[in-house]
Structure formats: C-alpha cells, structure tokens
Amino acid sequence: MMPQHTRRPICPDCDGFPAVVITTGQRTPDGHRKTLTVTCRGCHGTGYRTPVPAAVLARTGR
Image (cartoon, rainbow, N blue to C red; front, side, top):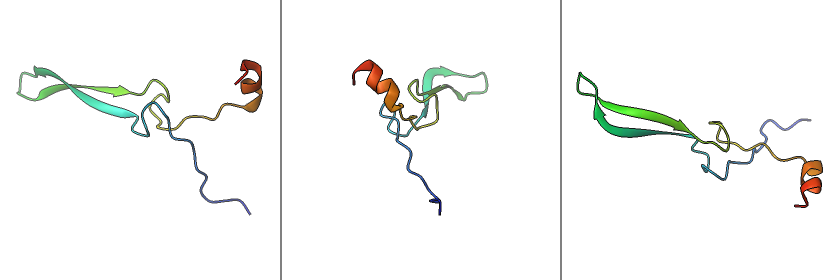
C-alpha cells in the first residue's frame, strides 16, 4: 500500500514561503501602490527543495 502523503523537504532559503510582495514606494496614477512579486531563488517559487541524489553527494564529498 502506497502512502497517501509524502513529506517533502521545505526549502531552507525561504522556509516554505516562496513568494513575497514588496512595495516600491511609488504609486500608480490611480493611487495604488506599485509592488513587485519576488520568488525564492533556491526553490524557484515552489517552497520545496528537491533532495540531492546520494550519487551526487558522494562525488562532491559531502
């Protein structure tokens, strides 16, 4: 029987919060604040890190 839920490792760079919205301090012509959405570089916005295969770790000496 296969497990229904598997635990995936959370990205250590963003702690599972992969996207944030940052205000720029500027306003649009209609008065709303301009924002930028930034995603985590480590997990590319997924919130999870893919485990590194053991063969790769053995080659790098970790």
